[in-house]
Amino acid sequence: MPRRYGCLVSQALKIDEQRLQSEIDALALISENPPPVVTRILFSEADTRGRAFVEKLAQDAGLSARQDAAGNIFMRWQGENPNLPAVATGSHIDGIPNAGKLEGVVGVLGAMEAIRALKRSGFKPKRSVEVIVFTSEEPTRFGIGCVGSRLLAGMLSAEKAAALKDRDGRTLEDFRKKAGWNGSLSSVRLPQNCYSGFVELHIEQGPILDQEKIPIGIVERIAAPSALRLELTGVGGHAGGTLMPGRRDALLAGAEIALAVENAALNSGSPDTVATTGVFRIEPGAVNSVPCKAHLEIDLRDTQARTRDAALAQIEQSVPEICERRGVQYELERIATDAPVTCDPRFVDLIAAICSKLNLPFKRMISRAYHDSSFMAQICSTVMIFIPCRNGWSHRPDEYSSPEHIKTGVSVLAHTLASLSSSA
Ligand SMILES: [Zn+2]
View 1 (cartoon, protein in one colour):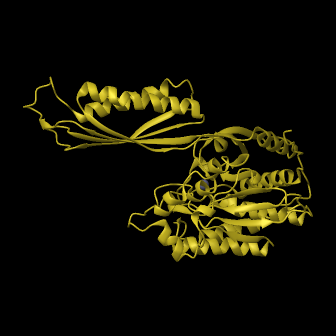
View 2 (view 1 turned 180 degrees about the horizontal axis):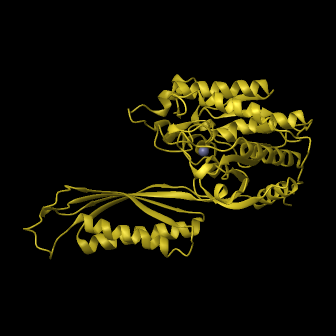
View 3 (view 1 turned 180 degrees about the vertical axis):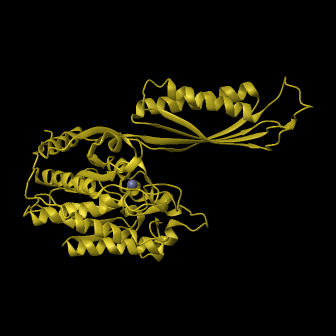
């Protein structure tokens, strides 16, 4: 029988927004760059200190912390029935170069304040509640995002993860050992439904809530990217001496493919399909020379696997057809195909009910960026709560959400955790 969730809303729950703001500001100072710039790259000194900062807060809040072999940190508030699968929340504290102080952080420090507020209100959870700090949500060091949550969900193998290399050729395995993250990476994977649910609080990183002046977004679906890399080899020659019949122009093959990419997205049948040829380099790149080589990188996203995969297949079919017709050789590689996510509709409805009881306007929406939630959703029911950020700006030092909006998001998160952790 599907589990039902009662909606618990308590006026006794008070968020300490000043304390939370001061913690956000303190963590922002732990950065590789002077304020207001926040840069915390995996395995940097700032990343290590940021982790210690969060673990200290967990200790002060009476949570027990453990870390897995991939550096994911789990901070647990023991429930009355510790044998029931716990409810999890959390996000990440790593930040790309030249980032702001909120992205990811709101979901970690906000979760900590949500738990403190629940404790202060006298609430006792049936299920345990865990705050997770995921390792390397940002792809800065290893070129792949969500390393920690991919490993937890079994979407990245331990062997592949260990062999990930940064720009200087240093592997994750080397870094990990030096950082004292003991144990085998293959121990990181979690079993299906080891959590009864996962909720991530995050800034929207888009302009909709800010423009429409709505304090809460409830994410129903998370779009997922897939990426292709394409090398085209034609035949070069003098722009004057090579007559048009029989040319094997790599750029023209690439141009036709770029149009096929656009076409695949336009005709997918879903308004959420977006496809971009974001990289297109040619050689030799001289005005009087027929291009002999082209390098293309293609990004394709959708909120539904069916339409995304159909568009992907259409692009992959058009490549040999175009290249054969133009006498151009090709190498086509799928770099990534992550799965789009449908959030648990019961969680979406629960948060909507909480917002209604709290008299908060809300909007059901789509996340067009992917998050650790994308991977947690592979092992348990998942949902995301969005708060507005000014102009939709993110990944820049002037990223901003008002203290009021942060407080509101934490309050909704706290009520969601209370409801989920009370369910039998
Ligand atoms: Zn994030």
